[in-house]
Length: 214
Ligand SMILES: [Zn+2]
Ligand SMILES: [Zn+2]
Image (cartoon, rainbow, N blue to C red):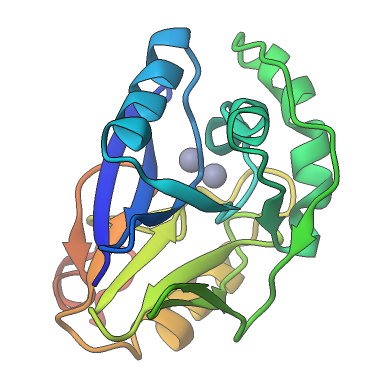
C-alpha cells in the first residue's frame, strides 16, 4: 500500500513527492528542493520515517523539477530515471535556470531510461509509466492502478494544463495525450500534479477549461 507525501519547493512552487510503503521503501519523484532548508526538509522526512530510497524518478526535467536532483543523487546514491527525450532538458536545466534567475548546480551523471509501459516496483506496489509528451518532449506520468492515483507532473493540473511554449512543447500533442492516455483512466483516479492542488480525472473531464467537451 503506497502513501504519497507532497512537498512544495522552490520559488516556482513545484510539488516534490515521496511515495513509500509499509516495507519502508520509497521513491523520490521530481526533487525540486532549491534552498538548503528544503533539502533538509526532504531528508528529515525520509530519515524520520527510516525510509529506504530505491528510485529517483522524474516526470520530466524542467529546472523546477530537478533543482534537487544532484542532492538526492549524492545523498542516497540514486541514478535518476527519466525518459530518453528528457536527457537534453536535464543537461540544459542549469543554463535555463540562469535566465530564470534561479541558478543551481545541475546533475551531470549517468541516467537510466523509462518508457511507456515500464513498471517501477516498490515491493508489492507498482507504478506504471505512461508516456505523455506535449508539455515537454519526454514527459512521463506514474500511474498506480491498484490504488487509483497518478503522478501527472506538468501534464494535467487542477483546471489547467502544462504550458506548451517551452522548447519541445506542443499544444495539440498535450491535449491529445491527456484525452487518450489520462482521460481513459477511471474517473475516481486521484491526480497528484507537478504544481498546485490534487484533483481527479473525473473532475477534470467536467471542469478543465482546456478539455471540457462543448
Ligand atoms: Zn515542466
Ligand atoms: Zn513544473
